[in-house]
Image (cartoon, rainbow, N blue to C red; front, side):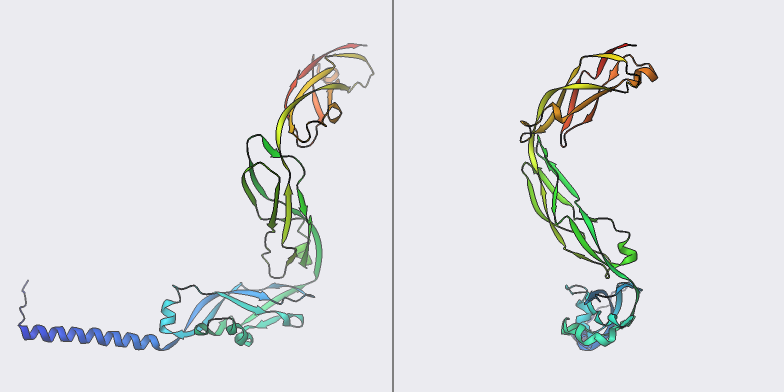
Amino acid sequence: MAIVKLSASERRRLSAFVTCLVLASAAWMLSSLTKNYSYKVKRLLVYNNVPQRRAFRALQSDTVDAVVEGSGWEMLFSKFRPIDKRVNVDLHSLESKSFIALNSQLEQINQRKDPEQKIISFDPDTLYFDFTNRMTKRVPVKLLSQVNYRSQFANSGSVVIKPSYVTLSGPSNVIDKITSWNTDSLKLENIDETINARVNLQPVHEANLSIYPKTVQVQVPVDEYTEKTLEIPVKLTGNVHYYEVKIFPQKVKVTFTTSLSKYPELDEDFFEATADLNLWSDRNYTVLPVMLNRIPPFCKIVKIEPQNIDFIVKK
């Protein structure tokens, strides 16, 4: 490849040309970026002042294309700086109409926006809504939780939620299908004491549905657990022919875990152990398994001794 050798004067002229070209390009770019342009951006619709006497359902997506007017600089840097991409739409006129003209609200929409990001139009520029009967309904709150307890600690009582019911308001065809409302998940680790927490309810995902209140107070009793053993008498069931039956032993030892606060009060009256004689008459069992038909809440059975009992039937 041939190497072009330039004289000193030619190198100076080439350097001056390149410098002028760079400066001209920079001047053109600066001039272009200072001009105003119109360009499209995606915006999320947020509904305000929803009608109280009419339930509605939007017939279009919750996003629109907004035509924004701004300088080339603003267009260039709009993707790199944080911008509120929400558009607040006032729905108070739905009390008497079935559509909203976005362009009629441009002035109040732009009042909440950065002046440098002025919206000049929307696509679509009109929002249409479907209307149904509106109703209210009270439904129970359901706690979603992921609680891990310290060793030997556990839930020791019923969870208390205040308020235990929330009020829903919205279209009857939507509310009829709702039987309960979940909270956000309560996630806790290494718990060794009663939980008292304010938990948010899961948000609604439809603009025409509302919920009150939006938070609840949750109490989860927690206590340390220990083992306890009681002797429980066995009751014979299924003796439809009234045979004279003797069982051995007449009591079984039941070992279970219970909270320390309930340990003193638990006795044999809280339990019921049975053995079914039908297993002998119908299936020829030679021993009868012991079943616990009544167990105190929040107690966990560790073992039953013996698990089977002997019996003698005198016909």
